[in-house]
Length: 419
Image 1 (tube, rainbow, N blue to C red):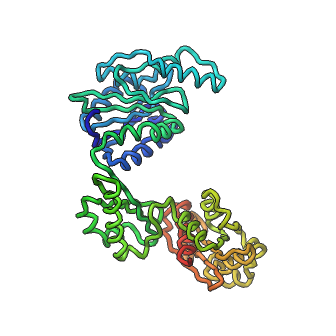
Image 2: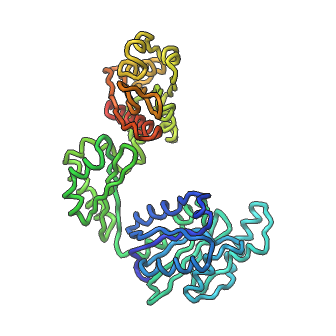
Image 3: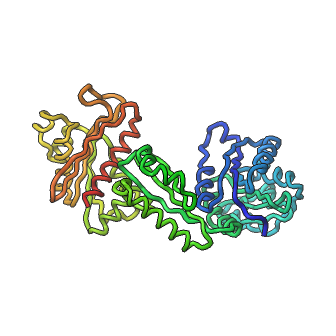
C-alpha cells in the first residue's frame, strides 16, 4: 500500500467551468467528502482543456499535497486529455484495459446506443493504475501513484456529477479509507437564534484552544453550524471525544439555541419532533410565498405531520381563506402582529392542525415605509394552548430571498420551541 494521505488539492478540468457555463459543484462535494475523511484540502483549481496548462496545474498541486483529485477530461473526444496528461507527468505508458473496454461495450448495449470507435479511448489506462468501474456512464475512474516512494496519488473522476458522486461514494471512499492512519469522526451542532459573532464570543477560548476534537463554525442564512471533529485509533473512541465536547458546548449559553445534532435542517428537526409528539402542522404564508410548505414537502414522507398550507398574498385571500378580520387589517395593516396571529389561528383551525404558523412582512426591495421598512416581518404561531408572535427587523440591504429564507426558518424555530 502506498503512503498515508493527509492533504489534497482538487483540480477540475473543463473550459466550460472557466466560461461560467456550468457551476462547479464537484469541488464542493469532494471537499465535504475529504473533510469527513480527515484529509485537508489545500486548494481548488479550475483549468481549461489545455494539456500544457493542465500539466502545470498538476505539478503545482503535487508540490504541496499528497493527493490530487481531478474531475473531467476523461471523455472520448480529442480535447479530453486528463488521463493522458497525468500519465505523461508520471512517465507511464497507456495500454488497453480489456475489462474496462468490455464494461463500456456492455453499457452501450444496455442503453441501446451505438458505440463509436473513439469510445475505446476511454478504456486506455496508464500502467499500474487502479481502475474503478463506472456503472453510471462510460468513463472509468482511476488512481495513479508516483513520485518518491509512491508518495503522490492522483485520482481521476468523470466530470458529470451524476457519475462522479456515486463513483466516489462506492469506489473512492473505501480506497481512501485504507490510506488513513487514524479514524476521524465529525458531529454537527445546529444553532438558530444566535449569530456567528455571538457564538464565537461565547466559545472563543474553547474554539481556539481545542485541538482534538476541533470546533469549527459554519454559517448559512440565519443559522450557525459547529462541526466537532475528533481523531482517534477507533471510531468508538473518536465518538466519545466528540460527545464530551458537545456536552461542554451545551452547558454554555449556546446550549439554549441548539435545535439539533447531525440533522439536515431545522425543518427536519421539526418533522422529527412532530412525529415523536404525534402532532400536526399547517402554515399560512404571505411574504414567504410558499417557502415553508416547500421546505416541509422536500422531506420525504412528511405528510404524516404536515397537513398543508395556504399562500394568502392578497388581503382578500387572508380574509376569505383564513378568516382574518377585515377590521384587523384596516386597523393594524396586513404586516402586523395581529394579522400574523389571526392567519396562524385560521390555518390551524381550518386545516385541523395542532400547530399553525404564519408569515406576513415586506421582503423588498420595494414596499417599505418609514414605520415598516423592508425586512419587517411578523411570524405568528397558534396552538390550543395559546398564540404568540415574533417580530423580525431584518436588514433592508439584504436580498428578498434572504428575508424570505430567514422568515421561514423563524417559523420552524417557533413551531419547534412550541413542542
